[in-house]
Image 1 (cartoon, rainbow, N blue to C red):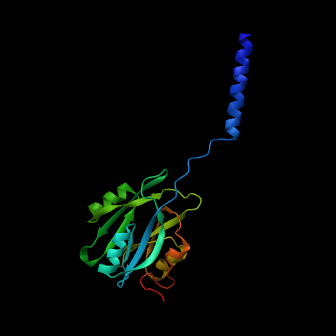
Image 2 (cartoon, rainbow, N blue to C red):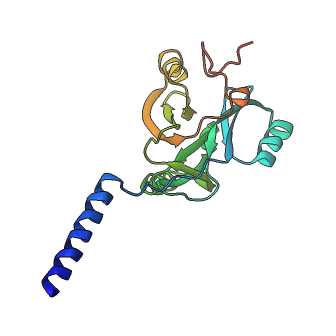
Length: 194
């Protein structure tokens, strides 16, 4: 009888393992991104990115920036698979560079190079998940500035027409609502097109 109970328990356990292998529990879902990452540009062609609506409004009213749209949606708190998006700024030597990185080591290097730590702008994904888009990071040694875009075409324009070098993918964000998204610049990232 004891052997029959052990055999029955082993059989039930084996069936449960096989069922679990065929139907693994669903992976935890990442909550939807909920914070717009605004992209602005001033008359000198300097781009500024912020997830704060009040900071966006101050830049428009007080600093001469124009809203280009929402580049993507990011997370306000850390979610599975995300990392902090650090915002730094360097205004030395007549240059104005807004620098974003999700790499803590790179952030430390930028601080050593004279950048000022401004804040964590929000959180972006490290790897692409369904329904997310890449954010490309570019750098221009000529103008000493970084540029960020979620448009592959705009990235190509910046490389071909504006002297930017592609530094790769910063991270992944959720696409913005089409009515609020940045309209990619086709001729130059430093000029507004009408």
